[in-house]
Length: 272
Figure 1 (cartoon, rainbow, N blue to C red):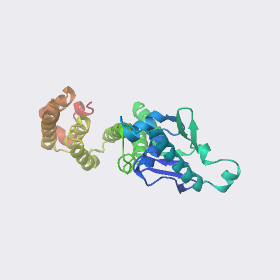
Figure 2 (cartoon, one colour):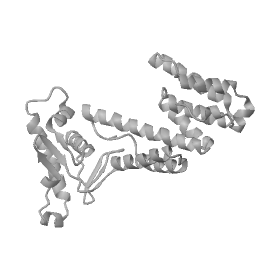
Figure 3 (cartoon, rainbow, N blue to C red):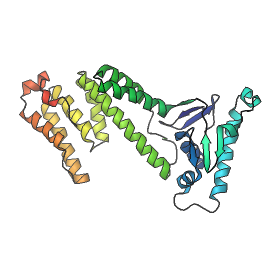
Figure 4 (cartoon, rainbow, N blue to C red):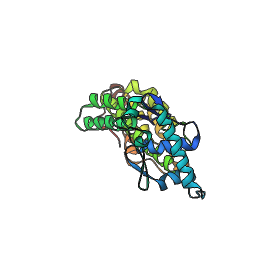
């Protein structure tokens, strides 16, 4: 089985899609896919589908959705697998208190993302910035749009999508940091400009853009980035920029234009 959740939901068995088109069964499959090879309690699925107000028929309706998913899996099974006694019930298993989607060693994009990102983080810790940038770039390439972009989400999936977005941002932050360590500040300007417009109060992305601008000889623009961030933080969160970001602003103010052009100010190598 192949499972993709880092974009649109795509689940295939034997190369055939088993992703339903109806919203509720898609939600059920999305939860099972995110927790593949683990038992998902009935209570978790019920909360995802109906929140705090499940109907009296919730358990029966959920069983209907499970049967619909099994029908799709059954239609996709390789005849040889069916002949060997492997049925849809072996893939989508009813367990005490819940259901489990067995992948039988298949691929899951989020697990591959986490594996590659972990390699990137370890490379960063070892000072291998080139290796870190490569591994993290490969991990981030697994993403399409936002996670489960075409799935109606309830409480459980909303929480999972927030978690996935956070780990993507962490990987992105570290990949940009690795690229800055490699002196790729000019190449990063367009990407960072787009990112800070999307994440208007994300301090580390703003500090990275400030550093990239400063190293590119664009000192005044780096200071403008700080002012825009400060205004957004005060307006939206009633917060001032962090001490680290204030130190960066002071360092840029104190540095001469010739230092900015040379990119020689070691005080600006890392913030946050």
